[in-house]
Image (cartoon, rainbow, N blue to C red; front, top):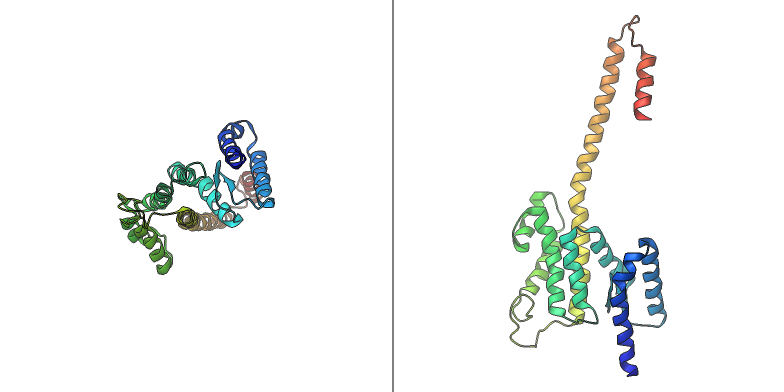
Length: 239
């Protein structure tokens, strides 16, 4: 019984997680989760609590990458990543479907950027949508996708034997890698919009300056609206 007790305690943590999260301030809750993971680390425990799931991941950088991808993504991408975590968790251990959900999160963000129906097609169209990244990185992402389509793994196709069945190591690698790619693509996707916003701001400033110059050129000494009134109006608008 003593060997099973630690499993039961972890199951209890997963069970109460969503209920506690509902009633506790978000910042305080994350602080408590961080504190719990520190205790796991202090006792050299090989698991961490990530988004409500006990997972065999101990690297702080890997945990942060996964949490960032979950918290900064839209609902569709978040659902895939959370499901990948659940399938990877100690209580489920469904590694094939965890990997499937991880790559689906990447597929989801790529399809949203390009409007294509599959990841394979979307990857070819990313550059035309302003998402430009190194060709070798793109090839690495394509290889991850091809790995999930390999019939011997049983990830997207029926498993014929257990020789190449994915283990926890492959599932963890895919979750961390796909989370990193999701974070990367989201940043790349938002960059063109930031550039557009910057240029529009510059144009707005130039137009304002030209308007002020034209105003001072046209206002006559006897005008009802003098320069002081105009400057006061500008100050009031921007204050």
